[in-house]
Length: 470
Ligand SMILES: *Cc1c(COP(=O)(O)O)cnc(C)c1O
Image (cartoon, rainbow, N blue to C red):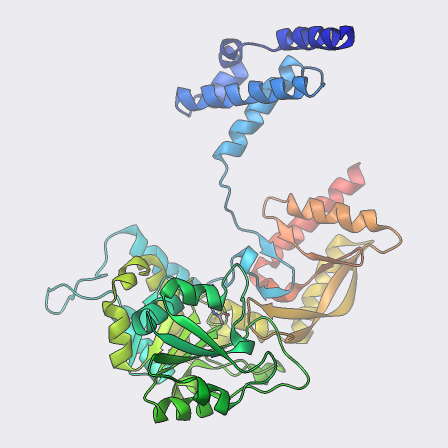
């Protein structure tokens, strides 16, 4: 008991050392820095800092000095007014990294987005007739031509597209899906959960590794509304496996007058095999093989802004278009503009040279090696160039990798090196993110556009000069 009293006494005296709110607000450094902001913001930053000080005293620490408190308030003000969401350089070698914002956009897409966001636009206004129009017209014919489809609809993202499709076509009815495709894509997108949200009943057929045509046929009842195929984007079943091909599923669908819905995930329009990658479902191929509706993302292999794209039979697309949920998941004008510009690259046949994700996928190893060598040289000492693999990622091409050249820093014998440089790179003005493997930091130039190299090299030089000076 006396010990506790003594502790409380010590705490009291530490509390008394804390300056008051008014004293801090009157401090010249704080009032000068806070001049740009409303007074109530400044007051709450000061109060919050004092609250943190009190908590640390309660935790048994000594009160900070007056100057340290002032400096904390100043850096808190800086942190509050800096944007939390900001650009970084993705040197992980994972081209479509969901945590790092998926696909970077082409300059043409960015400029289209900028010009419609600056002012008004003919978003839903038909310039020909002067009447009200549909926002979908700005991408519909491009999408139909690229996919070879009758109709198209664009919504917020692919999860919303699939939800809309199932809700509009299969609510209170049954949808048949192969057990091997009732998957979780990541980020909580689970086919069974989406199905439940839509009000459709999931009927799983087959086994995890094998599903046959007869499994689908036997599950069809008068309550069946659709057959669903889902691309198992982020995993691969190997060994004794068998899935029903889309064409076979289409035959079953035709026989029973059921639509075949195809969630291809990534939205690939180009042949990935030409780069030595595993084949990825191609949108126009799904349509050609008879899928009734095809669903895919805008910001995966398509290389555009976040969006959910639906292409297929007009009658079905119209049912989705008219469903009330379509309004709740509609796409905004800015991304619509970026999407149109991205689709235009495909139409013009310039996707490989204009769309960043395809530029990265198709980058030549010799060019990557040249850049890797320059990066390693800028870091000096620790850094060496080694062979490695880049990943496409983003729920596409499971197991599909591209040969690359990596900059390796540090070693198993000295794990502190990789840790230290990783932290320093993360603290750069434009942070640089790599990956650590066996205590070695690996940086992959493939997922960095050559026009970003200047920023990377400048950051390296800064870190190296910092090391020399301490
Ligand atoms: C990524 C993915 C989705 C979700 O798409 P978002 O655009 O992220 O909503 C749905 N289905 C499949 C097969 C996917 O790969």
